[in-house]
Amino acid sequence: MIDQYMLRYFLAVAETGNFSRAAKAVSVTQPTLSAGIAKLERQLGTRLFDRDRQGVALTPAGSRFLARARRIAEEYDRALQDIQHRPEPSVLRVGVLNTVPTATVEHLLSRHGESGGNEVVELLDGSERDLAERLDRGRLDLALTVIRPHHARFKPELLARERYLMVLPRDHPFAGAERVAPEDLAGDRMVVRRHCEALPEIDRFFTARGVRPRFVLKTTSDQRVLAVVRAGQGIGMMPESFADPMVAMVRVADFALTRDIGVLYAAGHETDRFAGSPFLSLLREHYAEIGRK
Image (cartoon, rainbow, N blue to C red):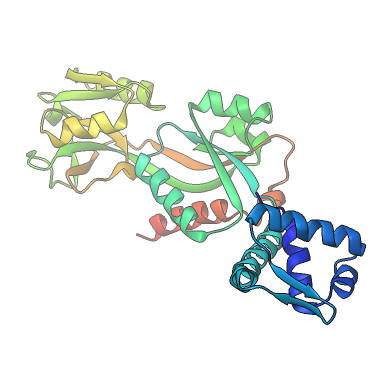
């Protein structure tokens, strides 16, 4: 392996045509430079310079090596400049509620990757309680989650308010309706989202109206819910952000429950700290676009 200093010595001699001037150019003594050139020639197995009283001249092998040595030296210098001038990436630790659609996460990460910035995002999936606990312990910088009244200590930033809608197969009799009465769904088989933060309210709503549907699936996977509905084998309640062109989403009469989605910041952190975060900017833009639709 050729050391970089030997390339420097070789280029200095080739450019000055003199060992003494070359030694001054690279700030070493002439014996040190001569020893470096001799070591380089031994490693390459050939003479690089012809020496006589008039000076130093490149041998044919030295001339061939010169072009490559210059390219190697230039690439090395560019690498040093790149390392020295590129700041260390900033790491943003983001918690994501497990009922935020996967498509939303994919969209945000894709756009963030395209931005080519110096920010690295570390994501953590979790429940409401898990994310709040991690924010309290400083394990996360911020979280995209449901905002509750007791979250005031996290300086909540509201991004969107969304309804819970009934997800129906596209060929369902009520797929094109503006709204559907809960009683009209009594004969359908229901997909239950066991991880849904509104499950108690949904259950009480249907029970109060005497609707006790049969279950086709109980799951913690929103993708599994949509798959069952797309297959025409069940219906389910989901936040409207899960809209899918292969299913229909219809309002349930007298069911007005909504959820507030936003950002919570780690306890003790000022929101100004994240003012320049590309990911946070994309998050705000994404939900602003949804609100305009």
